Length: 216
Figure (cartoon, rainbow, N blue to C red):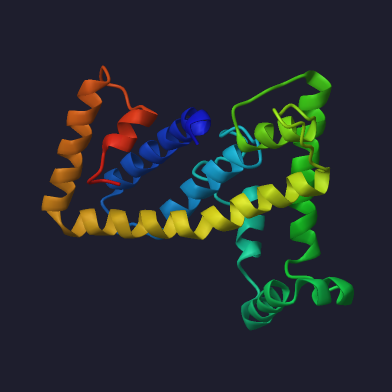
């Protein structure tokens, strides 16, 4: 995560700009949607290797990446049952050809990953993100010489996405709500940030974030 910290910070600038814009409107804010858009930006950039401006959901809430991320969590009771069966009886479901996610959605993300990998390998481009870590393993650039196939890289990116999307956006939603409703909590968070940032020459750093125990 430390290697991807600057990517998260770049996405955070978009979140800051969006919140400032919403505050000027002086209207009720759907903070869950704000958290979801930010999480989509971060995961798109960290897990799928997209630049923040390519999948910027604040500037374009209906871009393809956001559109298909919604589809991942749609489907109702049928999708829940398929997911439960797949997790409980993976070998049987594989033989039966049980599909958890829509083919269109899966194809979109597979294509994104394939295009990113092809571009980086063709142009010798490297970036401090999750895709690069997986590419290093794929190419055997690890101490133990381990390797990944394309399908394994795609699967790891999906796990990153599924594991971090809803959990992160929900946590942000509750945190924002609590600070909005409780001024004393907001003041404590602000004071902690000011105190820690002062130790790091006025900059937000990975180590500084770790020190913010109250906010964390």
